[in-house]
Figure (cartoon, rainbow, N blue to C red):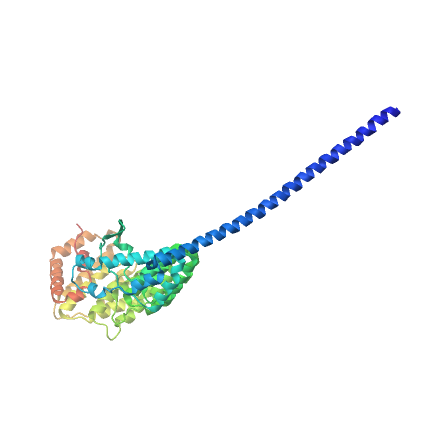
Length: 447
């Protein structure tokens, strides 16, 4: 037994030592591995720092090479060439020379402008200060004015470009260049330009570029600038801005249109504006039309245009009814025969509603008619009265085609068309406010 212990005890001691040595070896290996990894991480970091330094040196060398070998590409030099360009506005304001001659005159300058804008774009951030200074200086030249389908191409280094690559003005060219640089700094500068500009094309162009880049970020700023600048613009510029605004916000479009004056900068009534208001705002726009109709300086042309814009509401709105009666009763002679009859026939166009027949008869009763002399206008009123009575009496069974044929057979339609032709010859300006076909079709049988 004593021998057994002498053998077992040394074995156990040896086994324990083996395990301890094994653990020590494993620990030593991990420690060495961790130490090596840390050394490699430090080495990688050091190499990365050296690599960044090399990249920085390369960029500096590129700038030095550009400045020394290609000074003509420096932003300030490019801007200097732009400032020396000829303004072609005088050429484009004339009827002559021909488009072909204009293209020939502008061709070389357009190529140069394209080269300048591309050069500034390629310089990216380095161009921003030069662009900012140019725009702040107020310099601007007309490069080209496009007409419908007016395009031609030009070549730079055997590469062909379309004409529309060059904007109409040098300032617009700068705006497009900032949009093509596409950096946060260029967009910031673009926002500043849009906010400070009073030119609608610049405002819209900058706004479109910003919205295309990031609609969510810039939409409120763009809408704010549009609405702030709107009151100070000319009428055609306001119309342009409204067209763009409607693409982004129907609510803001409706709000601005409702505030838009019916009169332009020359205090002349703009019928197109009234039509747009009536189309969008419906009866909300009638009170403004009523005020315009009753202005002391409203002439017959204005009044015809106002009634034409709101005639669909006759019989349904008291102000429209008042305008109808006032317009017709203010006419006499050939004007009453023609424009009075045209106005009366607008009742045919009204939507049929319950109670309309009596409303229309009441309106006809308020029209001034000379009983002692039969006129074409009186004939029109009697025809309309008979038409309204029969339409109200027969309702859905009223034969519209048969009644129109009856009018045609009586010769009334031909006499009406002849009077319209006579007034067109004598007063074409008045006929601009009404469409004769709109009314002659109303009294002709449908074919």
